[in-house]
Length: 86
Ligand code: SF4
Ligand code: SF4
Image (cartoon, protein in one colour):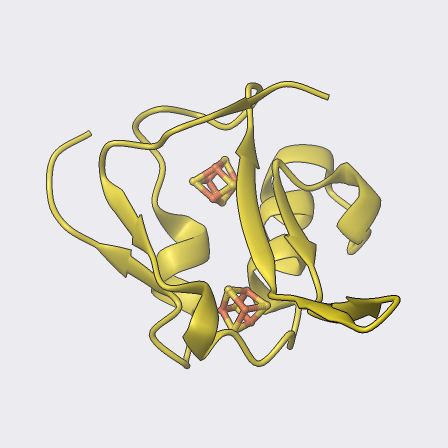
């Protein structure tokens, strides 16, 4: 799946608590359902691959709306920070 860099939201994946609030609000607004698989943001939780720790990844999908910042507004942990602009 394609990803893109969002200009108006700064990602700090180290702060992510994997609460999924961002995915839930995105899917609710854009597909009228609380379904993380329909969100335009992906959270890939930190995990071990063999003996290597792969940190949490946060990505915006191409379908993410450029002028939207709802997920950052609903992130209570500071992992998504609105930095202004569209
Ligand atoms: S900015 Fe809006 S459209 Fe993009 S992932 Fe966040 S809530 Fe969804
Ligand atoms: S709302 Fe913030 S803390 Fe929760 S999963 Fe999304 S980025 Fe992580």
